Image (cartoon, rainbow, N blue to C red; front, side, top):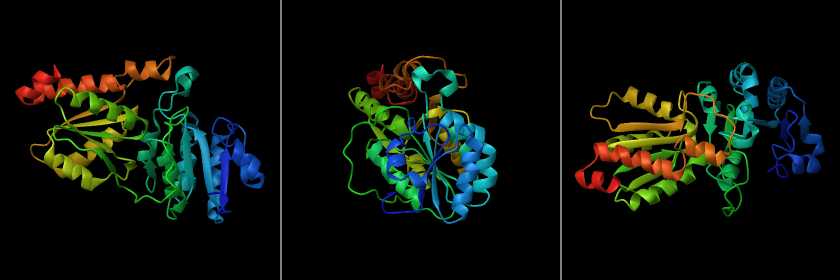
Length: 309
């Protein structure tokens, strides 16, 4: 993308290798900017570039973007500037320890007017979301992804621009609507396969956009499912699932489905591998399947309850 669009700049705050910008730095040194350990300056610098017609991408760890929320709000979002936030180390980061877990960015970005919030499920979707963010002219966008390698999925041609606020249904089912975002989509798919073996069928939806939500999909889910489960690698408080519940509250619906919000609990996470942390929070495929199975056993038909036990 940077080869085709000379307006694209990459900005980071002493994290060029950690955010994967080494190759960009080598190829486009005049458009690479490392401002040092000064996240607030990185964001304000990006605002200045955007106001001059450039397309800056600010690549920071989720935990460090927290230091620049004031600048995100006042210097970027209030001005409706097309700054892109590429948020690395989102979710739990394992061996980096409790200070580096990035579990609040959905919460503090979702509240900001003019902000589009995305989370790709894999490296191919990340490319499309980056293209979507760069194509936007009327405000900032963010996309967040976890530490580590991608899933190894094939890359789908050239990056394409997604329709903002649209989801992708990955699997159909009748019993449970499983709404997942970002890195939680893959374990959600695996959980659905486990549950299928127990006689519970799940619609699995990659919601893709945390803000704005796909309201058409939510309306369809609310009308057709008794159990809805949201899954995210963000704090449950104020996160994606909370946004779904806020939407539901505005509908004044009668007889709405049971909703389970699954994500990072309201406590600081300690030092452990990412796999161990996710398992401990019930966010592994097996943990998700167990939680959903119990919910269906409580609310479902006798046959479903028997197969889920």
